[in-house]
Amino acid sequence: MATEPNPTYSISMQSAVYSTAFFNGTVQSMASTIVALLVVALIDKNLALLIGVILASRQFLTVTLSVYSGTLMDNFGTKRVIIAFGVAGVLSALAYPAISMVLGVEVGASLQNPGMALILAVIFVQMISGWSEATAWIGSQTLVGQLMKGHPVYAGRMTFVARLGGFLGPPAIGYAWDFWGPWGGFGFLALWIVGGMIAASL
Image 1 (spheres, rainbow, N blue to C red):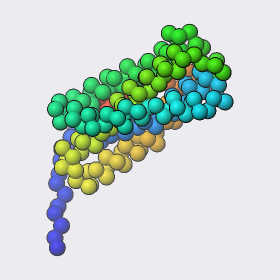
Image 2 (cartoon, rainbow, N blue to C red):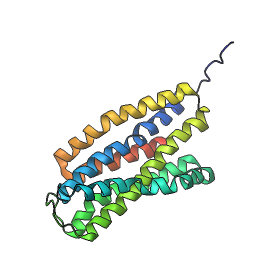
Image 3 (tube, rainbow, N blue to C red):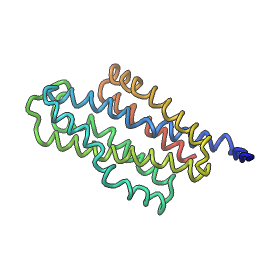
Image 4 (cartoon, helix red, strand yellow):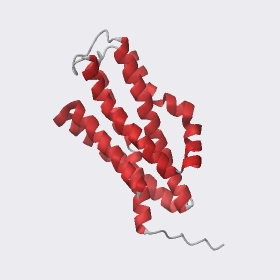
């Protein structure tokens, strides 16, 4: 039985789709890395259960609202949703280091008895950030289905590019934290998310 030839798509379109995957498919691992650094810098590492709850809260809105994310893409278009959730992702990335500043908690304090305001603020930002990241990633996968008809060759390339980003992103954000502290690390994350927004706009 003869196999169908692969459909061809323009290099510019493929590049834009793969770029959204490179940036959007990486935010989860990058954010997990840098948020863990921040939480351990703010809260005593012996409060492992609390730290685990804070890190897990990132998935709460993703679990409860994923269906609605898909509906938003159906109603408003994938590109618009990626950009809108990218804006939310950028704002939430910058909110992380702002929390300690607003609440007057020094990064590196490793509090043994962190205040409820600090805990709730980090959890709230975690939920917004996680939902934004997951929705943008779903959007990147949707683009392959919409623009490239979900063809396995192009889906495979997108996955490769996304995993490449996942390999490069966490060390890069760790480097940014080492040299510029929390604002530099989360600022780098915000710029990374902007990269996904720009790619989606193309």
